[in-house]
Image 1 (cartoon, rainbow, N blue to C red):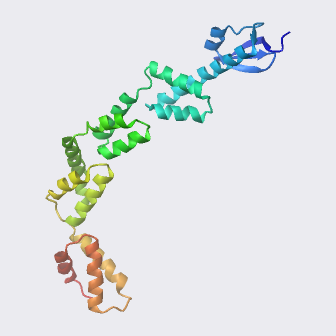
Image 2 (image 1 turned 60 degrees about the vertical axis):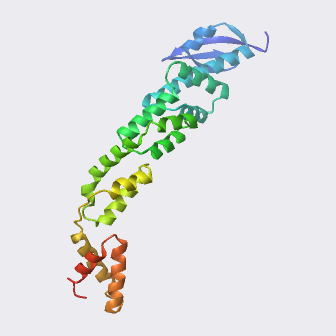
Image 3 (image 1 turned 45 degrees about the vertical axis):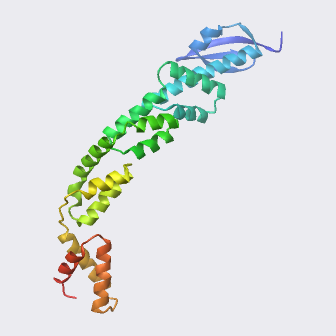
Length: 263
């Protein structure tokens, strides 16, 4: 008997897998690998042949894992590669699986990138910088990212900005106009819109100021905060005015409201 040869002692089916007992070890193989290499009882393989069978079995098993990973949501090529690397697979198996997934139509970075664009720009209302950053994180190459972002026209940015403003505006009425504009600009820029377009759209808004109640509330809090500090009337007034200006209230409104309080 050649010590370099491996003989199949027994093959037992267990669920959808096969337990293969050999003169060297016991392994688990899938049905496709069993059939492809004729892994049946008493069959003899060289060590090199059997190593290829083991690698093929690992590849088939890992392909199923990759398909399951993709089934939860669409993935980029980089995401699948990273997933397979985390499973400690040899590079040749990873390359083979990636090629098969592409051939089967499960991996397509161009389609993936445009799907991200459609969802983020038209459903989530995110701006171009947000989408650009997300695509880079997904491993999409620079040329494709640039091509996708070209689809985000200025008109679409303006349309989305207006939708967001209309959704947010009623939540901001308690703030002074300057504060409303600041909050809107911050939110829109954080969502990935170009600052120049944001400022232009926000600055042209005719906002309603219903901040009198908030101003009075904030003024009362500040009066209480400073009442124990033994400040002169002028010092107290200066500190409170400075604080309220930082909150975005208009100077004239602060003075008018201040006059209603005794201090």
